[in-house]
Length: 320
Ligand code: APR
Image 1 (tube, rainbow, N blue to C red):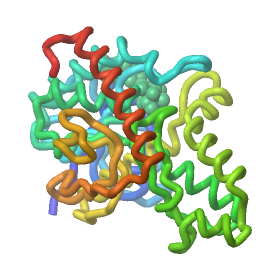
Image 2 (spheres, rainbow, N blue to C red):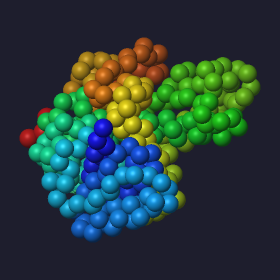
Image 3 (cartoon, protein in one colour):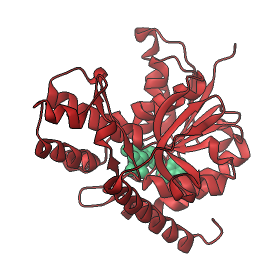
Image 4 (cartoon, helix red, strand yellow):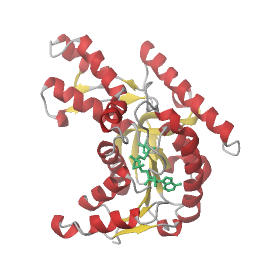
């Protein structure tokens, strides 16, 4: 069977890390695309030169024209600008919206059958813009946020409880940003929900609230430390988990920014919800019942995403 082709649009910090992970995990061949000539070519060659050491067979190529992504099975989009200290993800909207329009047109022309994963921020609005401008079916265009947010939550919880990260599951809903909604009653250690662990004395409600807040601010914490850009290792790993579930038809249940058509009372926008990712893309959206404060948190998050999409429509009236 021929190897899958994975196109990475944007060859910056996340793009380069994605290419390396695709190689290490032998998920397929890689095409790195960027508007800065030389960067995708240099990163592709550098990673290819590591393949004999690590023992992976993957053809890695850097390109400066969209033709190079032709026929890709998966396209992962990180093109655009990341934030700097003091900026919110929303501050990126004007610049990155224009980039999404270009990338969407490139995908429509050269990779219309691909499964597309958007990482560019502000995520929930950018994935919407990418779907609108590419014209691909909504179930084939998805945003990476929830896997990263829940991974951060899981890491902080594992550290708090001194247990393996593997035994901690976490559930987050809503937009990628300050309004994300971590659902503690659906987050567990080996199946034991967090509220029960509070009762067992493993932690306090106060500590749990602090961890939830740290999760919400997880991206800003990294930006504050790096100063010159935003997180890239964990975002790349998260998108790879989504790509792998699609390519291997694993049908993993992952929190992703998915296009809602009435689920959770939301229609026509992307919001973070649990979905099943398999060979058909987003194969199922899982709708759970939300309790009062969870519903309020989710509605607030949806309101924030809607606000950002309205800004996009104002800048690019042809979308939506
Ligand atoms: N087409 C293709 N590539 C582009 C375009 C464009 N129109 N505009 C910018 N790029 C490229 C840049 O040249 C750069 O190499 O996108 C790359 C972005 O890489 P970085 O600046 O290193 O940013 P990164 O950390 O990878 O984050 C990318 O993901 O998490 C989000 O907020 C983050 O929006 C940001 C994106």
